[in-house]
Length: 184
Image (cartoon, rainbow, N blue to C red; front, side):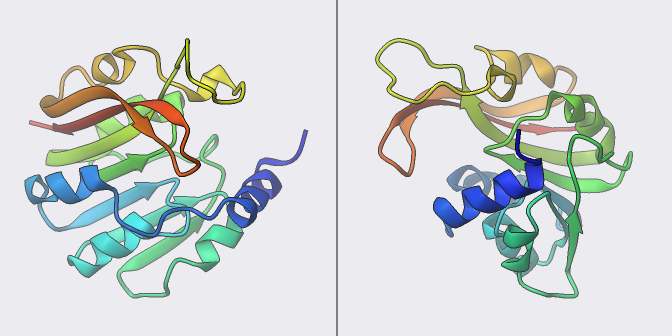
């Protein structure tokens, strides 16, 4: 099996990621206080750049050095090249946590603890899809189950939650869960 870093570097080379900000983040950013943010599995920085432009100090975390090279150098962006299977979030540090198109269940409890009081979580990723979905077989460890995202963040005040059918960049039908929540 390929090392994770190499696999992700190749993935970014073969399948360029979108450059526009996540629609969910854009829609709900007004719920977050401008301050310290983290973009988990930031990729090439589409959400990182958006947050930095709004005045956030952003920790941009990813395993792909290829992707991180595409994140702009800025005094408001701290690039962190690391394996998220081993990385730990600092408790009570973030006004905003962004996690889009990535799932690492080990980080869920850490995310709740890493939010400051009043901090906002924006989380969106894929759900197991059956039936007429033509996606190739993938590792189920990286896919949510129905209502799992909602249940994972019990204790936070939910601002928005939805599970829906969507289309990915290759035009394939996918299922996605989206959550915006705030720590009291």
